[in-house]
Length: 147
Image (tube, rainbow, N blue to C red; front, side):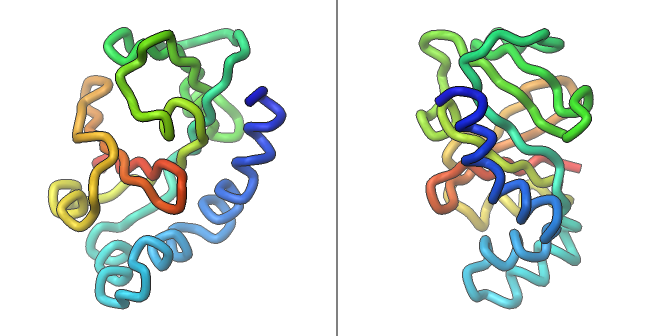
């Protein structure tokens, strides 16, 4: 997909993540389990963090993670909180992460949160001080980031 197609595909996710806040996202992830929804929102303080969009376009990259064969525009440097990502050939991640946008949420009690979901991408430390993992939800990656 080109950059325009990726933006269109991710518009719905951005709306839920940014405008519906973490409340709607927690509701979706809990799939009717009121106790899990409450736990995610209250105990884990789940909050929207960023959206990641893969691209095949060249950009002014400001970060690189060689182990993931990833160049990126960091979400903290983008005015809309978008993490633009370009993966190199043979990047060691599932197709869903390589080709589709993802939404990231910061959570407390990271180790407990990840026990509640089937992991798509195992726990990793892509950068110093950052612990993440991915789950799949309705065909997209959801990234959890430790607070």
